[in-house]
Image 1 (tube, rainbow, N blue to C red):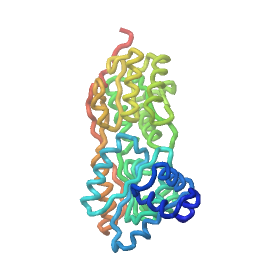
Image 2: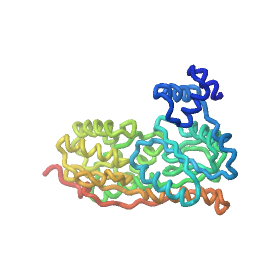
Image 3: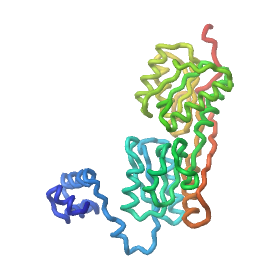
Image 4: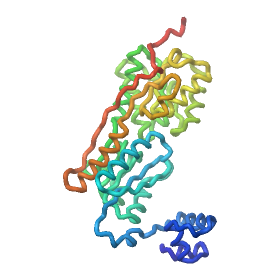
Length: 341
């Protein structure tokens, strides 16, 4: 696929396509949109590497962010940007939706840009050996560890929290407050990703406390969507009045759940305690302030860059780091109340 193919597809000149791809201002907006849609449809990858042959060194690191609208990623991205600049590299940032597959985009990105290394932020947890053959440069998984994949641990690096262990810790915090009827709000219980890991941590905590899991207290909203989390929590509140606590696998889901509980006339934490994981800025402004396990967001970013640059400079090899969280005591957890009083 060449630039001429794109031009023929759009019915414009090669020079017009070139001006669009190089962000020249002297192109009508409707033509710009037409060309960019054609680029996407035809899967055309501009040969930036060829244009950059005058460069004698390759000093760029790629950052692919899956789920760009997730507020949890913002401070991580900023930390990565600062660390990459401090290390003397240029950052190539590429953002995709949660519906996109980052490995497809990585294949195009590594062809179109001259990258030394790559950081994948918020990717899938189930890469296979065959899939990562597309990546011929060192890469680090940031915030995830490919728990359900088949890649050899010596072929990539990762920096994340222990999602299952931290979920266990969150639920144990509720149990220590006397709660035994604990609902869980997750995207899915078997998505081979973060939801499944944190749900399993919830089950581990119940088992160790001798609490029989109650399938009726498991809420699956299907995706990390606050609207869905709100609706399913309202539904559970109408059907069940016996649960005294709720563990949400993320702050955003917890915030939606708190609104649902309020709208159903249930007070947080007096009628239902709520705890989550992440520590996004938004959760500081709920009423009451959300109790959550705060991830070390800046450290996740800087360590990812440090590991990658050490690999590139020959100072280190692939490694896998698990960082801890900090319990931020908000106002959404209290000892279990007697519902019969």
